[in-house]
Length: 250
Image 1 (cartoon, helix red, strand yellow):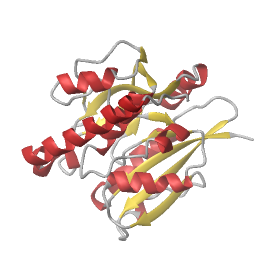
Image 2 (spheres, helix red, strand yellow; image 1 turned 120 degrees about the vertical axis):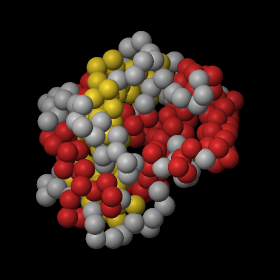
Image 3 (cartoon, helix red, strand yellow; image 1 turned 135 degrees about the vertical axis):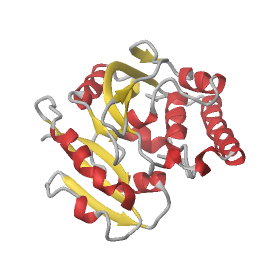
């Protein structure tokens, strides 16, 4: 029986037209014998803007639900995630060739690792790409390393949560994405790092699209009062998990 990597994507109307590029990047992935991917696309809402952009492919499932933000959409998609691993892919982003295979190889080789991330390039509106400094050394990332870096670098992690590849049982154990209006993926990353070792791959694994409609470009995303509240609860969750002493693998 073939084993599955589940790709989870939250989407809403304005970003739906980018699904074709995300799909193309998935089709370019090559996996080891015995492995396959299945793409769960979960609309944040129930309109008619997204469905025309969903690929006609038996490896793709599309569902709709009540609007609650991308974290809610991703978490509800987990009800249908029947694979060993979950890979995050935002609707407007693209995987690079080999990204899934590299993530899989890292976690299959070391059962003490709970999650993996990789280097990111920004995909700019003109089609060019741009990197940024600060990537960690490739290899294992110890527990609390991301949390400690994030708290001392203006709430910026040294690895990108949009590249997460995680064991399904670990993702469920920490409760999926946080119920926040933004930074829900950072909240998940820090929770994972509080209880499990991770991995960083220096090869580029994701093209992170920059465009005017993305949530992180909206004014509300940088509202000081809301940002402070988000960061406070994200850190409190990670510290609480660390303080309880639970580790993955148990």
